[in-house]
Image 1: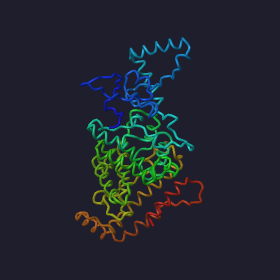
Image 2: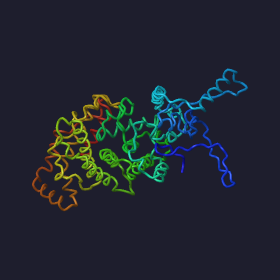
Image 3: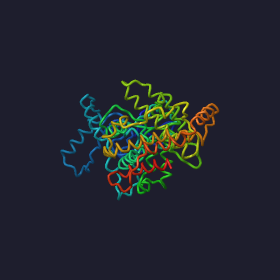
Image 4: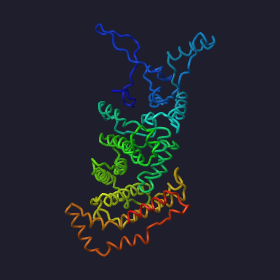
Length: 458
């Protein structure tokens, strides 16, 4: 088992003594090449030389990760510096007194160290693999794994060997997150973009974010990475990079490390983007799991929440409509039956996601300006109307296998045969948004999503 730094894992103590047991000398633990002052004083193993500052011990204990100054040879150092070194070493050996002022200063200094170290941020000319910028999730104070303490050490060791507790850092992470909000979030807003950026930039504290959802976001975003980033990541292709992130997210889900039903639903929705020739039903499976988790938090009944609970109502509404969109598009794309039937939720009788539901994101996006963001929300609303309009057609072509739902579907289709074509024609005339590719007023994403929605219709 490799050395792993987790909140609940025992830290390994470096014993420099040569203990003798039963006449045999014990094997001495190899010392780290470099250690911060805090780890040196406590005589525990430090991963400063491996991951960069702050080390995990300082990060978990709330201390400032301070690198000890490099000492000159004693024959070259001035006399007064040698005297200071002796006094400093004696104070470290005796142990510094822990006062509230020093603790507060340590927290402030530690917060300043949360940004990735410069050596971890690869540039275009760097030969260092992006894989070397992986850091433990504890490096970021907002990432949480609620049920980690419930796992046995053997399970933790296995997950650690699969790097499930590691996330990218530096430029690679920035690129992944930016591409997620550029190409995934506009028409699948499972999370609140405004809240995420405030948390990601550490403008707000006290709002934890699930590592499961975070790994699922990285999985989806990896499909849109530029080729040069994929090559520098050490992956052979985009597919292999996607598989890596997917495996980490799936293992976190399978080991029940997350217990929040809403977070589980968000992750399941994102994992519906899984497409593999050896596991062709995985996207449908994740959709079914997402629906179960959504029902556990009453997302399907979001419209019953009173007006004074607008925050909860909007959060559940966006979750449920994301499931509806994925349900319709998966049925349309892979030719499968719907999982959210009109007998469970009549999409035509409920208002779709509108601009007022996502108004806090309009001016909080770091990848789109306010005008572009409003236009993308209009396209999202158009897709919600399309999901309602195409429901009967999908139930006709791909009827449900459940006898009860099949009987209801046949009765509904026979009563509204004339509406099969009219509903789509009405959507085309009232809700379809058309933007010319040559119109330079709009961001290229606006043109892309308009053409994608038109492709769904055709």
